[in-house]
Amino acid sequence: MLTRKKLLKLLEQPRCGEIICLEETSSTNLVADRMIRDNRLPDGTVVVADTQKNGSGRLGRSFYSPGRVGLYFSYIKVLPKNAENTGLLTSFAALAVCSAVNSVCGIQPKIKWPNDILIDGKKVCGILTKLVSDTKSNTLTHAVIGIGVNVNQTAGEFPEDLAQKAGSLRIALDREVDRAVLCAQIITQLDTLLLEKKALCGDASAYVIQLRSLSCTIGKTITIAAPDGEETATALDIAPDGGLVVKTASCTKVIRSGEIDDSYR
Ligand code: BTN
Image (cartoon, rainbow, N blue to C red):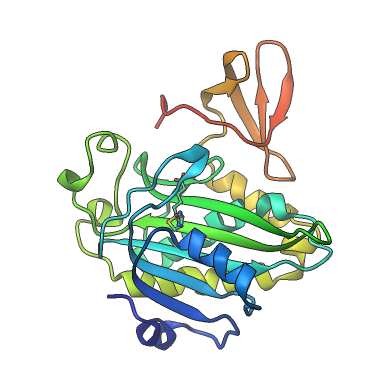
């Protein structure tokens, strides 16, 4: 099991966030959300679970979270009052995951806009960010960044509906990966990135340059879900706010959310 003791030993730098490890929970994002409402939590508090019974993904989907082979955790960021770049939080987390996977596994993953991390065209990680606001003052107070990584699953282990799309670090590397080492490395990368002033509050263009270079969406023909059906477009660029610049038959526009189909790898 992933334990606080193990993770603290592996973390490279002193940090103020708490580490809370659970054997099983419904969803670490839900636990984090509840904790924010109940307590005053230090910035960077992390809730980790060995398995989730009701892991949630984007667009109301579930996130497959089998015991002891994956990494499921939520990182709580206390938002500064002047945070301008909250729309980039999922992208920041994607950069942190890519960098951690690169340093622990020696392979460079790609980012499928907006929140999937792919290796060899297969999804090895999904990110789900939720913003929490104070109802009285109507201001954003926290972000819960939920990260799920397929670490040690074998090819035959995924349910039928995921088998074509999902991969794991173990499949890519042909060896097991230490989940605690990877978890500690992602936390370290997130701590470093999110404490940099320009990330949340300033000129984030340096991060957008990194996002462009790791994007596997730019240059692809994609299908976007639109209110009145589907639209075909070419992905051109990552916008300064983390949106996707696309060219459709009629115009060039930025989409800030949306479902991009899996017809490319
Ligand atoms: C997606 O692929 O659509 C996003 C998946 C996010 C999964 C993580 S696992 C930890 C955290 N808790 C959840 O219930 N979801 C996120």
